[in-house]
Length: 249
Image (cartoon, rainbow, N blue to C red; front, side, top):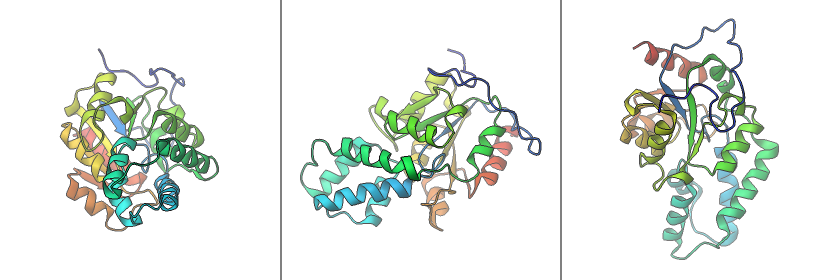
């Protein structure tokens, strides 16, 4: 299958917007895979707060620091297994459903795009891109709608719910690349989590760390480098420069 151009997923949103006059378009790259939470939408602080409050109400012993270290960037399925192992008992049968609903309710009034990411996406022009996220499909779609970013991806949205193993396994990125018709070695992944960076490298892709989300502490970039990131960008302008450098290489 040939590589899909912009907006040819299951719900294309039409042609990409015009490029900004003051910023030239980035040069062609076969495919850019964006994580969603913490890369496109500034959601990690919100979602961690909501889930930690629910876990505390249940009497779960996990601390905020341990939760952020072990849960961010991973799928619901993997996080449930981790939380149950720590607790030594099963979570309520409707835990993920209720947590998802509470998180989406908070997103309705609080969620914002990561600073500068909309401008960067405008500069991509016709370059093929997709979202490859550990979140559930409905959360990915609603997050992009609320932040005005859905138009940049059409239906090219991929969730860890579609694969056997979530990040840090390479399954999701390989699945997305296959569906988009791109060779893994030619793909660039933009990630904010160590699990996502490890997944990108395991898939044989270039991994770019991105630390512009409000959840990223001062040492977050170093943590992504330790996880194997080929380069790290602290904000959207730095990420645009890295993408331009990689496309010209």
